Length: 171
Image 1 (cartoon, one colour):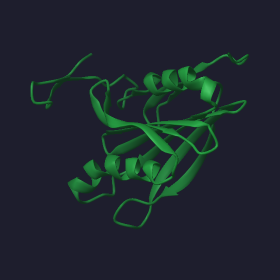
Image 2 (cartoon, rainbow, N blue to C red; image 1 turned 90 degrees about the horizontal axis):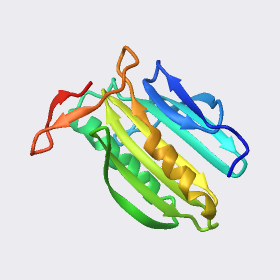
Image 3 (cartoon, rainbow, N blue to C red; image 1 turned 45 degrees about the horizontal axis):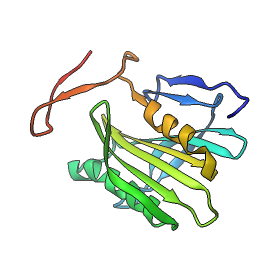
Image 4 (tube, rainbow, N blue to C red; image 1 turned 135 degrees about the vertical axis):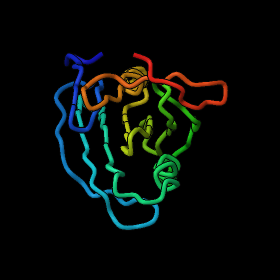
């Protein structure tokens, strides 16, 4: 267990809330999408000893092709796979019925990477926890704590029909 108290970090500009082991450092980056070029992104990182947690928010509003937006989840999942290590979990996921993907990797140095990738309103949310082997519980809690927010800072949750199509937002 960590001596540091975890916080509920809320960022209204990039529209998310997540549980972190302290205030994150923030840096702007250029993200390289599948078809080349760059788009703006921001990385929020919080570290607690050997455990590192980050949320990257990629702005996909400049994408013209709808398939590029939808394909961004698969593109990012591929990037995690090609890092190396042993993939121990690799499957579709959702949070509040927002589509995504989870990947768990046992790295060659023995550490573990837990990644969650979600897409909402042309924003790609990439959660990554890198932890020692005995710290997987904290990494999973971090992954499950993400909430995507709307323009007013309210949590977005969807109700789906039998085919998985969004039918209405749940308040």
